[in-house]
Image (cartoon, rainbow, N blue to C red; front, side):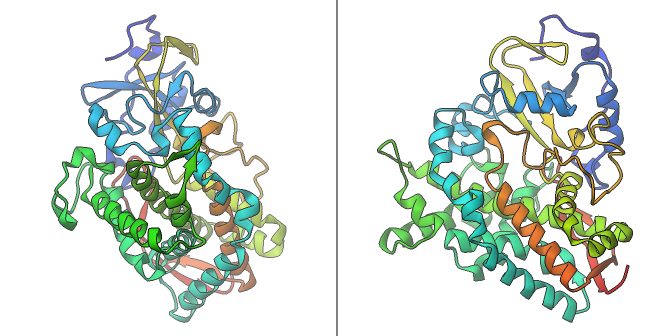
Length: 423
């Protein structure tokens, strides 16, 4: 239900729709988000049989992210729609928990993603990147997503997990179907991959989640008998406060690591390529001054905003941005809007590889749910830019992108690119 406490004028203003997945087939509807940011306080956005408060300003997104005691990830759901209690429990992953469960689960995997441990993977990331770029150049270009953006992060995360890299294409296929589940239509039937589970009990309402669960269970069984120095083995052995990770927690953790470890970074790499192709002068600045590679990577992340929103549920009557919101209300943090906030980023719609302000929300707004893979994504992106710069490799876009029909993942399914050696 809509909040009934001290309704502000902002709540009665007609707001533009930003939830229709078809809008995102043309890219993020930045004009709509600009209208939302122009409204005093929070805007009330109708959705299904209720609605949510749209949090669109940079400062407000940060406040919600860093106050989990007021804005819960465990109550309700972190996507826009509501779930029945049994579905919420069946689908609950790390991102759908609050402390102390969140603290326990995150501690089980956080060590593998520290900056120190991620740096140990640089040689692996570089070797994969070199092979992919060599093939891209030798073929004279092609679908950038298929040739570079998708295989790079999936091969890295599978190597870390201990999953056979030859299964990368299958797991990318499953990820694509999961993204479909965030839209309003799916291209596969409910019983795809042998699924017999009600879709409402599966992440993204997708039978591809059943397939990913089954794959993760197979890996768990293999590692029970043959422990290795990899993340799956670590999860199999996982203990926190003398409590074994439950079977449900394992399968949802495996699901999250595969999906988030590949989908978000490939989205950043896809949008990064399009931005560099559209702004050849900016890429030339990097070629002329390699010290800009880190700032260019941060600008790509801001520009791309791979995950466009997350939802929280209010735990007690409170106020945000001068708007009274009630216990049980939904608030949705729109990272896609906050990363174009004119009060924070100068000329926010300009792609600027030397942008000094890298305070973007590509990895969430901070707080306990800061993306585990942030350091890994940065490593993959900076290594890619370094290897492109070594080759003086410039990109020319040869086809319009095919975008995901999703208001959640800023996905690119395909985009043609060809190499050239000068801007």
